[in-house]
Length: 128
Length: 484
Image 1 (tube, helix red, strand yellow):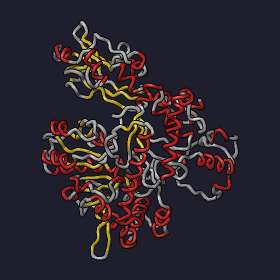
Image 2 (cartoon, one colour):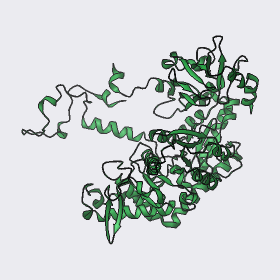
Image 3 (tube, one colour):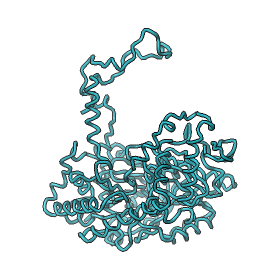
Image 4 (cartoon, one colour):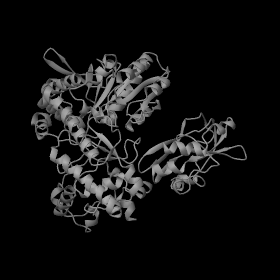
């Protein structure tokens, strides 16, 4: 069974979202997503300063099985990306919720985070 | 072993090199290299043995069952090859004037017409050199059509999530953005989601039918109506054309443009990267935009149509007119099959797939879409084996090699976890299908009794389990750099 931390929010496309104390929002992919993709070999991160709408594809992660899009969970502007992943995409496999974060957003509206799924809803959706 | 590793310094095979006192090269002295190229230094016999031994390692349709889903690896009758290699065809210069190429042009003209007939399209251009180029030509025509109508706000192509990866790549190359349309659990496109996604921004929809899930899209007429009503065009990916040959036609389903991988469906050995042919068929309204050249007949004379005749054409895809050899093999294959033979292709391909799916279900394997008939291919999912036994689709695939079978397509389509996409084609006898089924049953037993053994398969191939992750992360295809 994959790990689903209870302090995060989730999307049905398997991104996790964390509202930080400074008002930014950190985004990554869930443990379930990294497990389903398998060993990751390439990550294409979004451009910093790009303003994107929720559900827009903004980042590509590639495993030996497939290349998959990562979607913006909420409206906002990209303010930072995890450059460590460029050389070592496997960090996402070993630490999807901590060192393997993908990008940080300056959200258009902080309250959007609360509209996403909580851990138990996401867990129920995975079981279906 | 690489041929460079056979090198003995200074060894040469001079007999193959012209020896002359006359200067035979007109390359200016300052452009000539000063040091000799680092070529392998081997005897002629060493070179012959090296490459013969490599060729013996080939795993091909001529030696083994090759049920590679969505790739249609079927038998290519030798007659097609022999006739395509008649001296008159082989020796024809691509720049020979039309008057000296009447026989070849007649074949191409008839091939265009037969393709129109079997797909229900109004015109065909044979010039794209491969499936991907055919796709590009198709979407470029959609764009040219909208541009010609001043309809420049259409910037989006809709693509179901079951599509081949080439579809979104093609749309992007043609300057469109891509919107993905979800698929229902029964394998059909989610028409409600499609209706919500279409609008004045929609340039078109790219669809494969039967889809890569191995089922026929039942709502195709409704889908076509939705797209056309919104002013978009319908693109048919011909990857799975084999399933419907002579039975139902993309043109009748409402498609405006189709590409057919002639090398898959119409008799050219493929899988090694070429040569191919992605011939393009169009509905009446796209005819002015077809890529050139196209053959026409005037009286009893054939000639190429050029930019002069078709000023709105999207242009040329290559220097000449497509891969002549592939086109000729397709022509001969279609003539040999005839109208009835064409239908038998679809019938036997579909029968073989459904026989295998039914048998495998009987043996306890789980079909991805169990309640529907398969088209020419079907999917089994090994997610239960992965969960209970920790044996994955990849382990099954690798072990199949040991048992003398090319593995089916694995992990595609992405919608189905731990999947094998199996396409037996019409070529195989029942015994071959039964052998493959028995092999899967044997592997299932091995998965239950000795899963660790499967993890390291294959054992009988020239190389064992490859490290795919390292190959992707540290891609190195050059001998020189690995030597340093």
